[in-house]
Length: 100
Ligand SMILES: [Zn+2]
Image 1 (tube, rainbow, N blue to C red):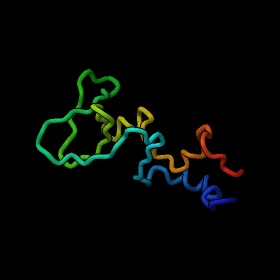
Image 2 (cartoon, protein in one colour):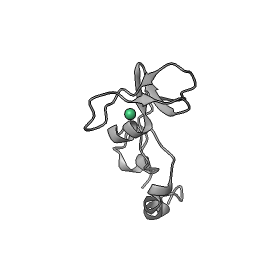
Image 3 (spheres, rainbow, N blue to C red):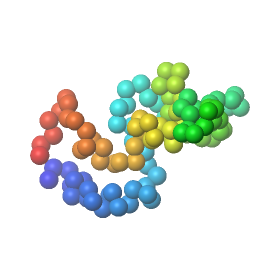
């Protein structure tokens, strides 16, 4: 097909667990940041079953949008980030019409 990537669909999924790459499908307003100061920062999302906000550690990569900070684990759980390299194939098309 057009990019060659579509043919790798199934194999890419099989390797998801080994693939540490993350993607932010909706890039609007989100930035990836590495925490590198000693100021205490907390993820804005609580983990299921926990009633406190957990600490973002120095050196940890997290996502930020405005005042909202998300650790990568919570970002994935909330759907802000995904391990799915082919997310762009799985969402509703807008703007561009990808050739089938
Ligand atoms: Zn978190």
